[in-house]
Image 1 (tube, rainbow, N blue to C red):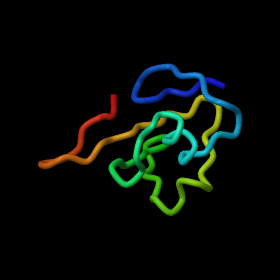
Image 2 (cartoon, rainbow, N blue to C red; image 1 turned 180 degrees about the vertical axis):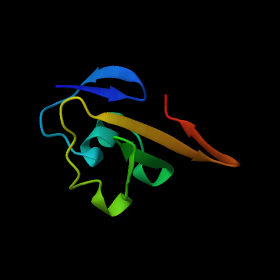
Image 3 (tube, helix red, strand yellow; image 1 turned 90 degrees about the vertical axis):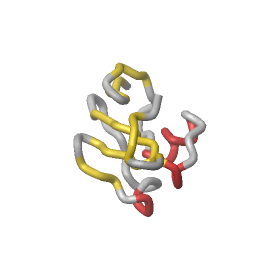
Image 4 (cartoon, one colour; image 1 turned 60 degrees about the horizontal axis):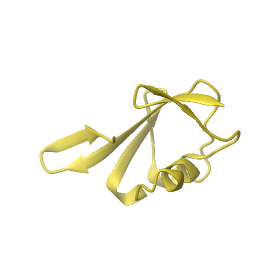
Length: 71
């Protein structure tokens, strides 16, 4: 299925969770903030939050002085 990941089209598996997406991207969950359709997903919910067709997912990395988009 297609989603928007940081503004770019990306194919992901049907029923993928935020936790699975981060694992697929080799991203450590403790170092990022995730938004799905502009809503913040809390870290304890990563494994239970399912991404759906057409969802807009933003992954932001935490850094000194603020956040930046994961690339």
